[in-house]
Length: 142
Image (cartoon, rainbow, N blue to C red):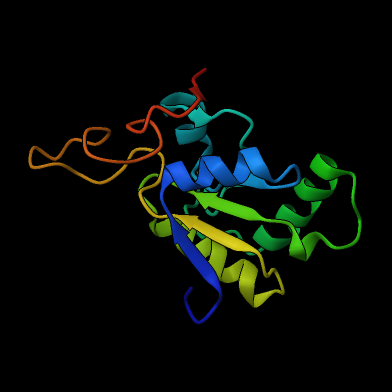
């Protein structure tokens, strides 16, 4: 765990948590274009960390996550203790998003270190060495 209590986990570990904890939420923080066209983990909650047209970090991100959690879980209290697993393309934006959530009181946070597409291989291609899709975990595409 880091100083902010965000645990770095693999996609496989994330899937185990999601299968074992009924309230656990997979939070996809990628852009709307990535979420719709590249694909997304099945049942992921989508709240972009940044998005078109300005490509700036959304200052309302934490509030939007709270609202999405209320809608998903029906809970209005205790949201900060729900297991939230953040994911982006390769784990960097999701780490920043998890850090922001931690700074606002969320305490059960995980970052999927390889992200949805994973890191670049020697040919600068993704989805070939690690990541959610490479691991064969459930995903869908528009």
